Image (cartoon, rainbow, N blue to C red; front, top):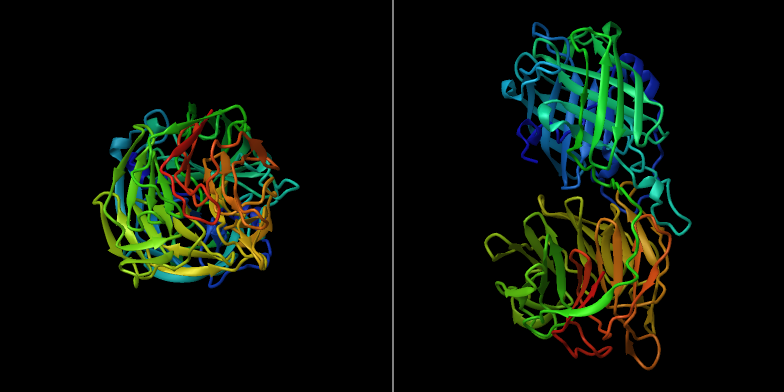
Length: 602
């Protein structure tokens, strides 16, 4: 988000805490968490929201846990004694999520531009401030410590949640279909920070609340170039927000000079906002304060809060596509690790060449051979996180390093580095979600791995059903554990379990039309497709040709045209309007590998 100031500021959330609004919103939603399936406590999507100390009503902190695994915070407060201006906000970005802590090492304040038509981003001054640390004791309570410049001082206090974001609540999703999928009504989330590119340096935070209201903040500057902020609440969420009463809290000072009884809620005016899409809108304001005036601005979305999803139109599952082929793989392989990043898919290890590592460029329809995996494995797992690929687990093929659990591959340098902290799962799949890598296991439990701190924790399985040769994917801000097999004798399942990272709980999802294991799965923002696999639950063993898909907001799987050839142990990917089955084995329970790439285009 290298957008001038908005590389720092528009990537954060703002929270306003006037005395009046703190009373109004304090009980908007303080939920009791459902029984979690994971420990220890890690700060996740549900920790996004506004936080304050009840005895200091009139200031507080807005926190956004973002989809890249970092955090952003804005402490919305007042200047220290003797400083210019009537309001202040302290901005912190690139927060490190370290278990139950979020650490900001380089918070800032700003000054310079003037509000309105004369707004000049070139006059912006960014002023280093200090450090902010939030340590959470549960989903609704945190301890704040800070260290600022001499005038601001240092200290700490206990914070309480003021608001949660709709569909990111501690106790789980509310807008669900009868089958357990997220309903389309809950997939229009515009909770984010917004700014007008022509006014880089000021912006808005739109917070959709669980009760249907929207809390709205405008962070900006006054006529002297000092920081200013106004806030209001729309009685509704959705495509149009009308906030008739925006207020500007003033009257007190930061730190030991703070007096909640001195906070004055000064009338400011009204704001109307019409969203034209998930990422753009038009804002009209009319202030009752002459220095602010009236005007029109065009907000553009800047941030994506972890766990949120916004779908402009209800997606259609592509039932009328046709099958064709693409460039063959360099090596006939099956039971590989696979991951996709951008327009590239990566295939590593497996039967056929356990140290092979190849990259498929969908746009060029070509393959490239990359640096060998240091240790040959079949049934390994891989996930792309940032600019790296994490390769973990699998079963030994006896070549190369068979001691190290996993490695980190740098896409930029084409080099592998040992990462012994990685878990050692096998015969499932891995995926990136919200900046973390998740590794499925044959038991049905899932490892969550933080690639920045190189730590992991185990998400307990949702039920006793084993998940050998299952697929774990990220879809609509959640994890889907799909299919697989278990028991004695082995039996395939069509069950789907969905993990909500906000509530850290599992729920049942829609049953597959065909029970399967060892199949391919791939997702986009709005589409999930599974295809192929094998059935070992009855004689004769067989490969599976069938394919099915589900769209965002849909309650059930739709049957799609069968693949020309049934394969198992096969990686899958979606690039553009095409689903790829890459290699695999054409005989059930056997590594009869192929290099053929089957493509379903629509």
